[in-house]
Amino acid sequence: MRNIRLDICYDGTRYRGWQRHPGIDNTIQGKLETALSRILEEEIEVFGSGRTDAGVHANGQVANFHCASDMPTEEILSQLRRYLPDDIGIYSCKEVSERFHARLNASNKTYCYRIWNSDTPCVFERRFMTVYPEKLDLEAMRRAAAHLVGEHDFGAFCANAKMKKSTVRTIYCLDIQKKGNEIRISITGNGFLRNMVRILVGTLLEVGRGERTAESVPSLFRSVRADAGFMAPPQGLSLMEVNY
Amino acid sequence: MRNIRLDICYDGTRYRGWQRHPGIDNTIQGKLETALSRILEEEIEVFGSGRTDAGVHANGQVANFHCASDMPTEEILSQLRRYLPDDIGIYSCKEVSERFHARLNASNKTYCYRIWNSDTPCVFERRFMTVYPEKLDLEAMRRAAAHLVGEHDFGAFCANAKMKKSTVRTIYCLDIQKKGNEIRISITGNGFLRNMVRILVGTLLEVGRGERTAESVPSLFRSVRADAGFMAPPQGLSLMEVNY
Image (tube, rainbow over all chains, first blue to last red; front, side, top):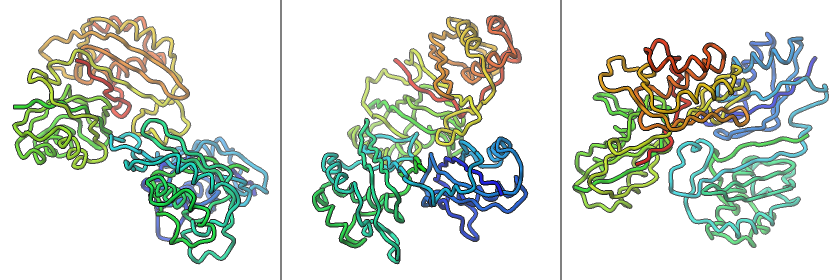
């Protein structure tokens, strides 16, 4: 069996997230599997680097699939581009070593969360931005971010209450930039728990508006979900890069 | 009566254009008039700097309206932002001299036409870009553009065959830039005939792919609609600026 890697982007606005569910048509994984199964005339299962939630975007999602077909990858790419809707794009389609697995081999991922911090119009990028006009203390948010970097138990930042496995993860970088009215929060880590990025962003926003202090953030590593911040909405979030 | 100026942006994707029509709900002018009439509790007529076609966007549309209400402009602005859908934005709302008329006083306008000149994905800006992957000779397009600049009879570039008034207009600037996969055509002129920008762009694209020469363009000034190029689709076009 050949092993094929796809580098993918999508506007997640109208999808129920990455992961295929029985009876639900509009998932990214489902759209890819349906298109590939038709193109290659065999049942294709696509493995993503990780799930993205409903409404979350990706500009650097990676996936792989196995197939028996000997169709050239250029042909698979051009047929995929023809079959897929215009809110799912394929950057590249390449044959890779049989050992490559998009999820199991991922060493780190970068997410970006975009906030429109103004009540002026945000018409053209509104699908990719969370509008949050309240005044935010960026310096306090950056101090809180510094506390989050490193290896910690992020159990309080996990939406899955029944999580049995380790909730220890490492954040390598958490950067907050403001340019004009837009705030961009970039987070790179070795792995993320369910909704973890959105709960981290919600917690940082609560620090930014003075509802909790930056210095209180480390206490969350020994705490529970109810103590961390709200879950920021999905539309501001994009998966930007997966490294192997 | 007070005279109020609005600076407006919109994603035109789901609208039937600027101009209100009886029985058609989704026009930009219609949305503005409905919102303003409700907010000010009087019948409001909005005058735009010009009509944009169905599917065309604006990042610098200007309009004005008269009202008897003494509601402060800050309050009108904040209520308008609350009432309008998220694909129509108001940059500013200011009281102006009673002589100001958004269309009659406009001295020049700038439009921008965006082309995605690649078969790689254009997922995030697809609503504002015309995908046109064919190879284009930019130098020939720039030579053709130079012939279009100046005062000319643009009758061949007007979609209104019954146009009785003068079809002479002046183009001050016609600039073609390529950055990455994107080509931007910017056009500034003292006025534009119906569909003129889209027909100019279509003609330039035909030059770019070698279907007509740059040198043949001046003959179009003494010609008819059938001789000029195709009408480029609306989604790549945005009204960027109106000057007074």
